[in-house]
Length: 179
Image (cartoon, one colour):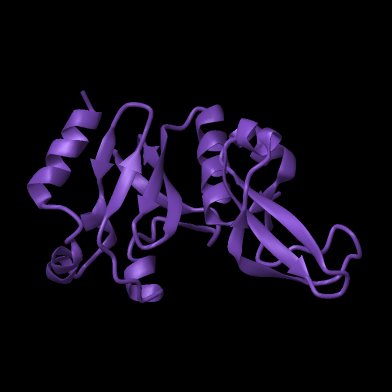
């Protein structure tokens, strides 16, 4: 259903492109569809700059059906909600996102990563990918929750990396968002 994008094919000549480190300014239309940034994919064959807007609007994403973990998780969360599941978007400070779906029968949230095609494998990132986790936050229609600890078996190591703000400030911020 979704197409993973690393390098875009050139829209002018069909050649291979390379993403450049610079970002392009979003057009008015891209801004209308909540493009957070626009990647510049350069074609060496025809010297054309191909735009890859990183949309966050699910309606637009269902049209384009391409992206990376952010786009995939965004649409997967939407689709889960559309068919009646309670679902929330999970943001990992170390650069990944996925979905959690609430299981009424198990009375708990299940980790679901549409990019990896896995369900209920919360230690995947730390033990499988070797990620050095620090902050993992869940966003639902009702609340914001720090869910870091369910994704780690190395709690002391994780705690030592949580240096962006104090634990008290994190709790206060989350509590303020939930008011």
